[in-house]
Amino acid sequence: MAEPVTIRPMAKRDLEALDTWFGPHTEYRNPRQKWMDHLRLAKQGAQIAVVAAADDQAVGLCALLRTSGYPPFQAANVPEISNLLVAPPYRNLGIGRRLVVQLEGMARLEGYREIGLGVGLYRDYGPAQRLYAKLGYVPDGRGVTYRGFPVEPGNLYRADDDLILWLKKRLT
Image (cartoon, rainbow, N blue to C red):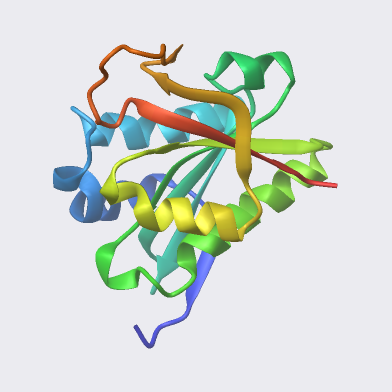
């Protein structure tokens, strides 16, 4: 990875690279549609979508949802970091950190005082869990959700991408 990596707004030209890196390896039923949704929502102003680019090819992606899908964040006007992805050969180089920090700075410039995100609980999310802790994110204190609903003690839940712990960080 000798080429420098830059962080820039996501563009239509990034779709092919995102498909190549992440299409077959994501939980999305239609990854191309997911990338196109990021572009559409960014154009509408509902989110900010940025990519990490090496030699002008997207090797990472992250978005800031101005209105979170998580009701407690919505109620408190807390934007949500979403869809942090870094291509395997570019992992452990600080790119995920740079993407998140870039979006934190943009949220701060827009006047947000806090920022939040959700992270999965099984092994594949371990690197993200560690990154978020190092960046100062802490649990929001509401426990874990499954498919958007609070987990109830005594019930069984599948350990999949819908089992989420929500984290927040002050931006001031």
